Image 1: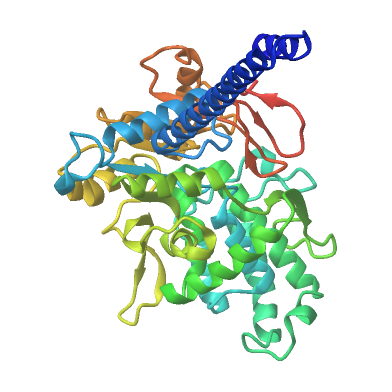
Image 2: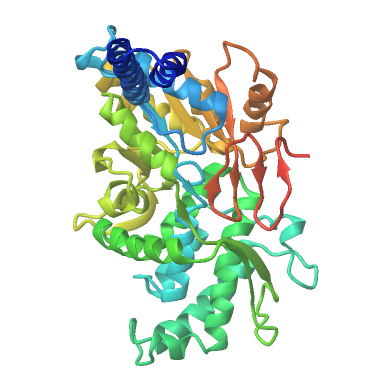
Length: 456
């Protein structure tokens, strides 16, 4: 084009005749217009092609990228595509389904524990002192707790000693607090040494039981503190606990019982986590699965009524129906009031009980098929992650579990098979200080800045 214009310029000013000048000017202008049109046409074609490619990519993307680890994200996307309703093998009468743990899997941290802490801080109980005594002793052996749960003097503690102190404190609170039989406000009651002792020792007891006894004893224990309530009351209490936990900082907190009120158990202290976070990648995954015709279920070791509001209420972003939520279940009387007794019509939703729950209550709704996807984080999830031959993918949220047992074995398997095209298990890392997933297999534990792949 520049060459043509140069020729035109040369002819215009080089002394040619007017006739030749006109001829060359017309020729040059024609060439110039043709070049402009070709250039614009090329740009339009390239722009249209780019737009089409972007549109195709968006159509192919079944799951938002988020902070999923790279290989996990690719596998997860393929599982959705290969099993979703756009797949030729999709069967509407026997839909594929996925199963998720809740605490530390669907959300960061534990809403069962957060609700327990909220109960203590707001005296959210509906038991007399005698009923509380029965509830906290239910199925707990009289053996001493492990040495790392000795009191501050280094002496052993057991359920007999600590229950005496807790019930003694609660009796004072019960007679003082206007929410029970007294007249004092919550703020006034919380100034009492008995409240300070009660709160620290009850919170300590939860950790001591969990750190000493098997999961079939420890997991249901905290649910017995809902004795005297209805399901509706537990769900209302939990919603308040969720709202508060979502606003709390993600930190460790330590409670210590008063030195002046040692009682039978002595002075104790307990360190625990505060705060809970929703996970946007999990919210999107739940939606993507359901949008593609894959049913989503929750099987949690928490009390079912604690999980239901979190899983079902629109404001929390997970949006599944309550009939897709399974958890611990307690006996209720004829008025629907919860008793401190496990309901043996249901399996304990931990360990092998999760597998049994899936097989009895979920699989038969799906042509007795195995789940295509399971996600978990703890030893309580180990059984369901390994028990189904039809499982296509297992997501392990990396909490740096002991690699020599339980889910830690699967974490090691995920590391060992990371480069295999047939890998089934995938680790997902997170930053516990920020309460978010990270695009890595490694996790940064709360209170540290070191990312780790496997527990050292």
